[in-house]
Length: 424
Ligand SMILES: Nc1ncnc2c1ncn2[C@@H]1O[C@H](COP(=O)(O)OP(=O)(O)OP(=O)(O)O)[C@@H](O)[C@H]1O
Ligand SMILES: [Mg+2]
Image 1 (cartoon, rainbow, N blue to C red):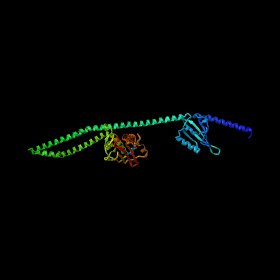
Image 2 (image 1 turned 90 degrees about the vertical axis):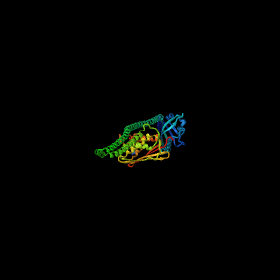
Image 3 (image 1 turned 120 degrees about the vertical axis):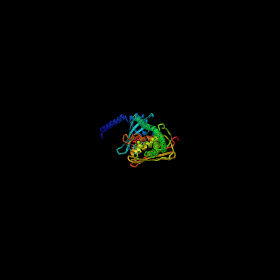
Image 4 (image 1 turned 60 degrees about the horizontal axis):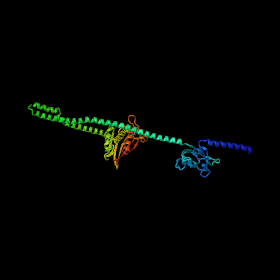
């Protein structure tokens, strides 16, 4: 190579080098080069933007490993990703908490790439660094806002659920209480009238007997005969014993009606929506009475709930829970079926299970069961609140648990555990 060619090559190399140098310094991203052949992989190059971002100048960083940017903040999961890539000679992109020379934090979006020599040996790593602190802060603020928003939506849904529930309960409670009240008045006077009627009839019959015995003493045989015929024709003897039976049966019927009205009142308990010691049997039977229409004659209900002591609870709310479970069970049995309700004493708790022989549930229904407004029923049949409300009443109000097991085609069991006394 002659001198001219040499100086030409060296001039063009110088130009290329100067261009690269200017390009590196023109970059707004920090650029570093670390030498892997040296002990501790120290930095051998930084551009101006790196100095600008970090506050460190060339003299302060060359010869040091880049990790000084982390300060004492070493517990960062992204550092593991970086270390792994460095060990494997791979490129990677990580976001790190780094610290400027003045100690202030900045978020560094770093991409690290390996540089291989002609012989395929790893010689260096080039790092491109961007200060994304503002972006990061904006993202964090957005995440915070989203969290607040999500919890507001959750709260709104809960409030909406409780409002719908309260409205429903209020309407149902008032209707039930209204019916109970309306039936109660005529029931009282029909009962009292029936007793009066019975007394009056007895008086009439004894007057009749007396009259008849007077007639029998009559000197006129025709009159005596007529009186005898009249007793036979009018079937007075049967009437006396029939009326006894009729009155007894009617009084029994009225007493049953009284029981039903009492049941309706117990269910409504408009004046007793508070915690008190109450029997689960009462809650279940009054719920069954209200669900009667839904059960029709097609569903057999087996009760085994006598072995548990009264518990401290809110009966008006537990009525709701049992009503919701019983109605769901009935709705899952379009034809005939059975509901078994069992209560057991278990130390400081009681365990109640409601088992049906209905259609059961597929997994996606099971996982959404207690979500407010989740329903598989057509509009007008289900709102999707029954179990959400039951869950809230059992877990939040009574500190109990509610669990479900279901098999498609076989049926479903809901199991509720309730502390006997949540005050303890
Ligand atoms: N015993 C059961 N057998 C089969 N599926 C059930 C049973 N209980 C609940 N489900 C399913 O769970 C869903 C949610 O029940 P939930 O009681 O919360 O609402 P709903 O019955 O649809 O409506 P609502 O009770 O508000 O009238 C039901 O739509 C039904 O698909
Ligand atoms: Mg329901």
